[in-house]
Length: 277
Image (cartoon, rainbow, N blue to C red):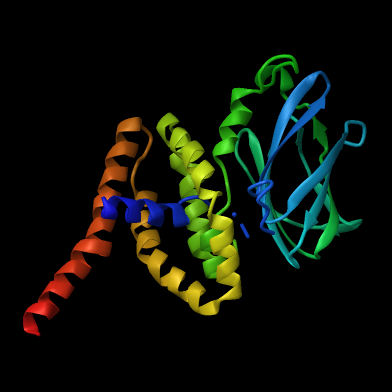
């Protein structure tokens, strides 16, 4: 039983990929319902700052986020449905143009924000396309939110891994993000896992990530602990995970591998030492 709990904790440390102000009110995850053109779009943010308010200007094709942070270094991700805004983006933070990292899939723009300044800040996201393909992928306000947008609730940031390796651009963090986006979220079982996983992960990861930044020794300890697990997860980059059976099979195999690394091997070493002394 202890082994299962420990392995679950290790998985929680790293599988979700971007980020580091601790807010019990929001749990670092904000879901904003943007109502425009007779439709509702869900914009999700995962960050170490709180979203106090937001505004959408359909004429300007601009989404404005009013954020508050108690930290000087701010890090977060915005998951923006391409049916709401797409095309060539322009970004401003407090009136100054900003150039974030952007990744795309067929439905969502993943925008990584990394800026300095505690207190209140204003983030503006301006696109060139508005309601692009809305008839195919969105539904009216009075009905449920689109399934395509809901599936992105499963996304999130690698708070603990990012804090351990010092940047969301670290190769190890990028590896985790790619595993999440390109492997786990390509199947229904993977999406279901990530949805449940995020609810638990964000209940404790902000505290751990914040303590990593404050305590270099703890940060190095976490890095040592999660490195073998990240290395084992890299195996998934070289296999096909395009079916539910493959997801389950490789998942069980990796759990057994990590049990061997974290428990069986150390147990053999301890047993050998005890026999000699």
